[in-house]
Length: 113
Length: 108
Image (cartoon, rainbow over the protein chains, first blue to last red):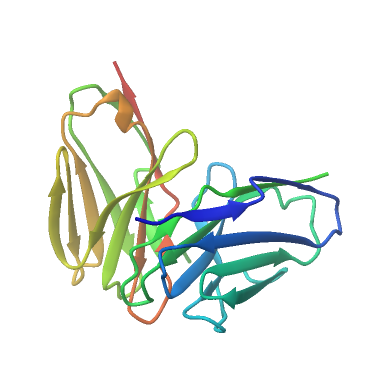
């Protein structure tokens, strides 16, 4: 088995601040994803990376940047935190885009003051 | 509009009863996944499906790609089944998209 580790677990930022969330996986999966979940809502796709050095925009990419530094890690940057950016950010990985059983990390809970 | 629609949005069951959750797609889905998000927020994989059916204990899921829907049947509901159930659909060329979830409460 493997594990997906998201850091930090909790992130408190100031409005307008640039904030970075990190995700590491040891499944040796090719594909990684970032989803956002607002309270009581479903998951919305922000960015995904099919393989190392690849980056694809999801449905909610505006206001975010992402970076796939190496196969095992995928980071997400909130470029300018907004008052309504209070959500849980979930990282996932899968063997590939066509073999897309998703495995999730525990999430980073973001609060903006 | 939403690519993946789940129904109902909320459901309350008596312990020991059965029910079915549904997921309808507006995309040409080739695979479907079902997850349970527990009260702590962890997402638990339940099923990964190509067209067809799978069963695991008291849970059974079916995916009909031609009619663009999937169902999750819960038999003999238990208190620990409470949480929010999500389906996620994708085709081979794109990342999985999620529905808004069905919040299930099982009562004694």
